[in-house]
Image 1 (cartoon, rainbow, N blue to C red):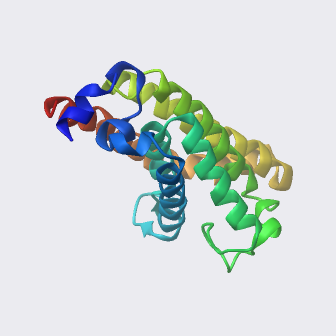
Image 2 (spheres, rainbow, N blue to C red):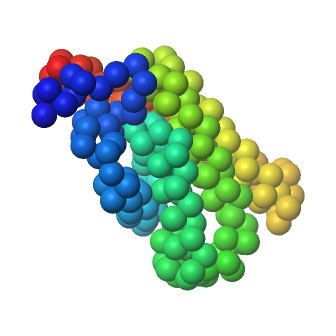
Length: 201
C-alpha cells in the first residue's frame, strides 16, 4: 500500500485516491464511492444535533467534505444520485416523508438548497481538484464559497414563496452560527488527513 501511495502524484490527486489508490483504477470502485456518498448525505439529513438558535443537521458539513475528498466529478455525481433518489420518491431529504416526497419536495420552499448542494459540489470539488484541500486557509475559503452558494440558492428560491425579508429571517440567519461551526469542522478535517497521508509515504 505504501508503494502505491508513493506512486501517486500528490499535487494532482484527490484525497480519496491518496488514501485508497486502487479506487482510481476502476469505475466499479468509483460507483461504490458515489453510492456511499449518497447514503452519507441521506443519513446526515436525518440526524439533528442540538444547536443555538435552531437544531442543525450535519448535511452541509458532509456535503463539503465529500466534495473536497472526491473532487468535482465524483462529488457532483454523488449529489446528482442523491437528488434522483429524492425525485423518485425515496425519503432521502431532511423532513421526509412528513414534508412531502419526490418532486413535490424538490419544488417546495426548500428546493433551492438542493440546487445549491449540486452547485457547491461542483465548485468545491473543482477547488479541491486544484489543491484547495491542502491548507487550512484555502480549505476554509473553499468551504465558505460552497456554503454561500448553498444558502444563496436557498434564499433566492425561498423568497419566491415568502418574500425576501422573511426568507432571510427564516432561511438564512438562524443557521449562521451552525454553518460557521460546520465550516470549521470541515476545514480542519481535510488538511489533517493530508498531513496523515503524507507522513505515511
